[in-house]
Image (tube, rainbow, N blue to C red; front, top):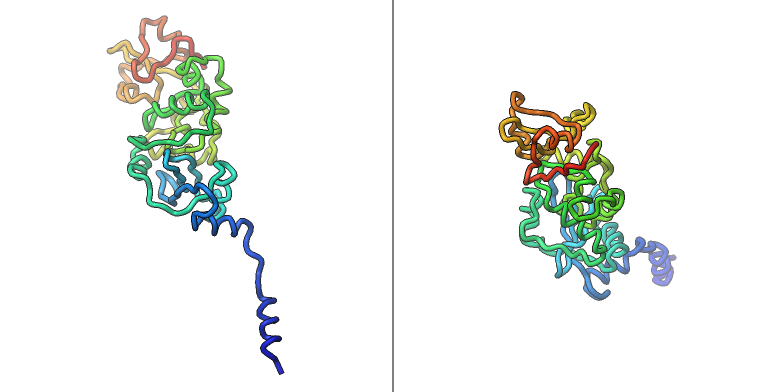
Length: 264
């Protein structure tokens, strides 16, 4: 005959060990483990994203597929990266619009953990319009560090808020799409969603063309510049080097600002 004591003992054997980090997640959810960020799981331009934010602004973006859409795993990664827990919260005003348009608008970013150099690189990436790309060398030149091309790539790789700060719009000088924190297929998908054609741009670069000019305006641009895309075939002039365009009497576009010293 089974006694109440035997029953309780049997029930106790059914107890399972909690998942790793379960205690931290419970405390974070209750706001009992120190400062806690808010987060949302939201549709991005190409796939769902986890977006975390503090009072100072958005501080962490992660493609949801990288953690199988699991908020707990995202919370663990966020704590390791930022040092704070996360709990569900209403999305910051303007987040959906920024993801839809590719422009941050009035969104604020909490980039307290990045260096001054990394901040300069990320701020410059924010200037690249949706659907356009610039080479790493352009970023380096624009921030006054023309010899720091490799360091620019490293800084972009440390971008804590990809997609919103568009490091996907920076490519190699030879036109190759280059690596991306969430994988190069997502980088291509993001550019395509913005109206760019990364495959066409790479194909053009393989022919040696890295700049295009208009013989009617006398201005040359990067091929993805919105002004370059309006040039008809009849009036388009292709250049391998920016210096070649300058030597031919063309002046650089004031918007995309190709440098005279740049070459493939």
